[in-house]
Image (tube, rainbow over all chains, first blue to last red; front, top):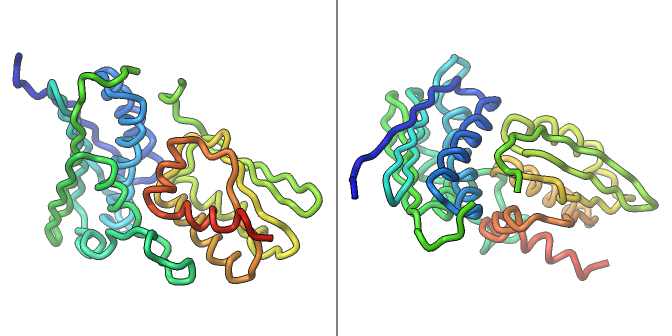
Length: 149
Length: 112
């Protein structure tokens, strides 16, 4: 058994129009690895949320890029979403919310993205440095007993 | 299942009697959120209608889409009029349950 990690790297304009390209690539890589339909759907949502954050918060009116790095190993897929814009530090710390304990009149619209990433992936790491951008790494482990797509 | 194709977002509105149903298809994400808002805007304030979103052909929704649904729920709740969803696919229902928005739809099912 080899411990090799293979990488697939995408660089996209930080624009909402390109987030579906990340989902298409994710689908290809994850289905090839043998992830279940449900796991792939979970990862699609989580990765899109990470990309959305880069698109929305990283680059204020200037054109920027988002790097997406897929790291394929024998038993896990890690997806790193990286931008070099302003960090979204505040978003990361304040907005890990759900609606479960709230009345409709009290809920705030927005901020569910980080919560979804954490709920849908096995591991989520966020490194955000002011002025240097944000790196979000999402990991899903591959359970070999699962039904294949 | 054909999930690997990116499908363009579409919204079609049909009104029958006092019920207005918006049929969504494709992927509702950040890039089409403004289109979805535009379709919903004139309907949200109409208190004469029960507003329903049919999600049978919706392949994907992100937190932006859920956020818009939430803001419509809030607005309709404030006017004491209905806003519900129907034929929600399992992978989308899962997100509704996870985020907690599901209970706001469910709480209207036995009213009126």
